[in-house]
Length: 408
View 1 (cartoon, rainbow, N blue to C red):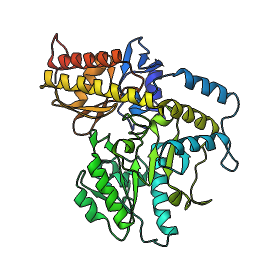
View 2 (cartoon, rainbow, N blue to C red):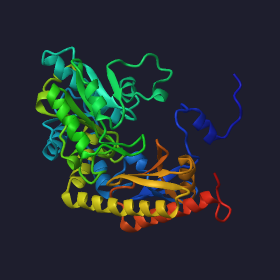
View 3 (tube, helix red, strand yellow):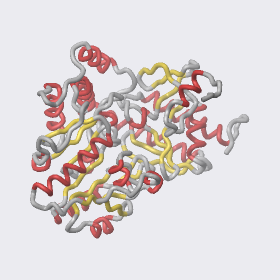
View 4 (cartoon, rainbow, N blue to C red):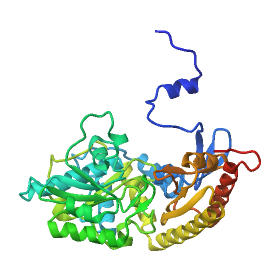
């Protein structure tokens, strides 16, 4: 079979599944809030791998952990005790509502664990008919067959056969509809405190509190998907702590490993005790290297002074976004979000804004509702925040064509 003659870079790209729309840029080095490309350009990273590198690139404390643990032991199976796993579980439980933790490798796996734990709890409690999960329109819970069914987005479900059954999707923010959807077969309600992918849409404390009351009134579990909101991103270790509404199960990932694949499902004793030997497991979940890295991340991010600083930085950045929305209403509409999980809704196509920002050395993430997500590292400095706002101003000028730049 004859193949076309192509360059090595193009050949490598052609060997990958074409699942992603990739910008034509590659990075060779990162430090703190900055990434350095193969063409020697530097970029202020307000994307952080989609809310992953909360402690910035190549944090010295994490490099030290990788080196020390990497020289000793990377992986053993869960057929033996893993002290690093036990230590991280103890740390997370001491900082949250949880009594037990289960470790895996990605947000989707953490959510799958939460779904199974919720259903298993009712099965063990003599209610096997309770297996359905109520979720919200616009949710993003992962890319596995079960989690795309939980999210209910038609474009994610298309082409993969009949959706996995057992999920009831109700309109975002319509708590009355959520209550009506709960019934004798409902095992849990699963929500994101802030929906990142659909446009940084937040459920307020009143809405979350009422959902908790509905669950309590009907014997239903409450699951918080904090894959994106967790690990300090909103100014608390987990977003539920801002609202004062406590779940029964919580899924965490992304920032937990600062780029190293690791995830956790946290739960109360009554739920976790139902997950007996043989009910669940992952080969790589809870390996000593991942556990050591995640433990250091939690040690650094769970400190109250650190979290207060994240909150203050979030206020500074939010105010900057509000200002540029007022200055450039032709490009920007409104700022939204909490802590350093922020977004700005655009009045021109968001892809155009993201491209213009990148041309001005700023990396961002697009989301639904024509929103540009702004996700800097939690260690971003005030000067870097101001720099990022200035680069967004330049992006607006680029879009307007000031000086012969990009036009929509």
